[in-house]
Length: 117
Image 1 (tube, rainbow, N blue to C red):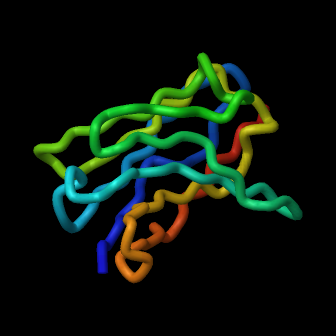
Image 2 (cartoon, helix red, strand yellow):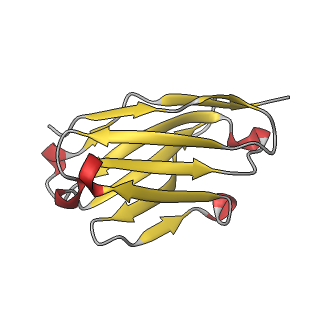
């Protein structure tokens, strides 16, 4: 029943930056991991970045060094800072709350990121 509200998507030029936000309905410290996924048209959804309740982060190789996942526990919010964006980053980006209990896992509604000149 964790509710996630995403924001921050939009249209940017190659080389530009964008920051996505995901606000959760409960303390993200009670969620095992907050994750960002993305899905491009005709392609499978892929895990982009994650941050565990302990603050450990992981990234898919294609965004390593360009994207940063972070959190503000006081605001129950996770962020994805995306720098040096490329057209290949164009996708719908989804926030996901991962929990050990499967019934508590949830997805945000998705936010479109388009990188184009």
